[in-house]
Image (cartoon, rainbow, N blue to C red; front, side, top):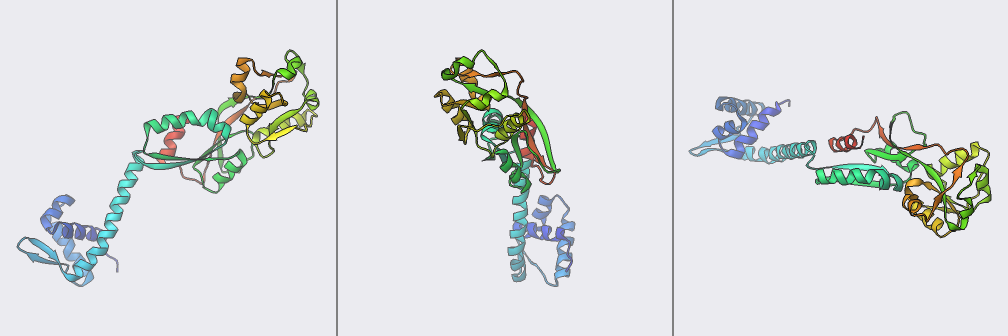
Length: 293
């Protein structure tokens, strides 16, 4: 049965208002148009839907059964329209982001604070994971976008935008004070107790690759899960820490730690925003991305 859905819309408003006139006013159409719509629906269904009364109209038993279903469907559509509009107007919705500890702390958090102040109704979910896992979440559509640190290898559908430069450094405390005014070779690191991240991170992979290209292979004294913990171990003179400079910044400025100098400077790299061509970007996520970019 192929019935114009507009007739069901007219039927809904007539039944809700128990009046052809009020339905016409709410729909902003003429009363004859309402009457015509109901007549065409009744002809298509093969049964009367309304009984005229002194106060207007009331549903027939068949009409009541039909209305119970039409009302649920049409009101669900109205609720959907309302939610849709709120999402478009950034009154509610959800953003799913993937980020590492480092990108969250030194880049994303500031923007999340600003975004939340501006759009408090938007729910933001941050999945905290290293770059390789964040990429997998993006491939699987579990996040809207990710903020990761280079280097990494991504599939062709991933768009990458560099947003902030970062610098990898080796830092040390007072126990290693004799190194403070020296210009070192990368090979000198092989003689030192090194503290670094575990191997499943982009930071560790980056440093390993740079050193390997210069003929240096490190055997770390400690391999830790977080850069914050590397800094704490370094402050206690347990070794020379390999971190992104942001983590050690305040301790370098206070003199508690110092940055080792090398004849060949360690190249800088970037924080990157990654999105997928296969994942549609919601209005809320686009607004946050616009703020960040």
